[in-house]
Length: 368
Image 1 (cartoon, one colour):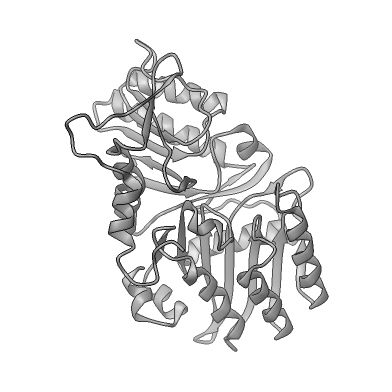
Image 2 (tube, helix red, strand yellow):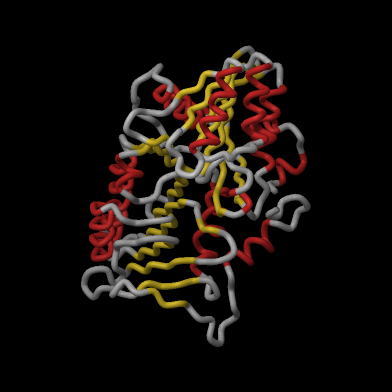
């Protein structure tokens, strides 16, 4: 658990001191629940807003939102009723929230709300301050012990302002606006990812260091794949860590020689979406995979990790560590076939085991 949280029981105080990163399931999901619980019980908190995609039939976090509404907080919840496998649970929670006076919004017609956002508005120093949590995974305590995901807490004015603008848009009180830090589907995410890939290609052509490492669940969108091929031909080193389907073919002579595709199948389901662009020194976390549906038919957010120390943590833990895995890793060849990587005479390395040892050393932070 991050030191700032371990030392303090006040979530808001910890976040004011600096952005906080959680890496699930190697670190506990409890701070996320505590964030909403403290907001519900804090007399200075005036509003809580959250998106709900998957949460489960029994949810301490959702019950806390119900309790917050009962206490007179302004509670707004964007509920996705078409979340596969969780439709009934989401409908039941939506009904309970409406019964206690919460503002329940059922997403945007024609687009699933897949973004993972929570915002707390608090009275401080004669004004209002926004605290936000952004994640790559769902607000579901059970899956947080089974899926790998990142969660970021921040009260950065510009990032929290972007989150507020997205909530205004989702609740019908505002139109899509130009965001300062967040990339959002179906408006800007696709274009921004293409631009980031092309900038790496430009850097490589100029003889500058250029590299892309991206981790996600699937790679299918044709324009993104074409841009990656072009970047490879420009000399960009590209590593894709893709748990599921990948339509790109790596290692094709003269076409994708500098691209490698890895897949990690271990104890936990690999779920986080992480995008690293070396020439820009940029690290982004997202709710979206590189698929048509995520770019064009869903509400998604992709957000930067701005703190240099946290940026390094993300790259080291979710990218570089995974690239060293020779126990649970598979590599795709140019024909699309996967071959399991073998340690041979090297020391066996399991990325998930390394992270368990690194991050679960503190009591109460290991997976349940």
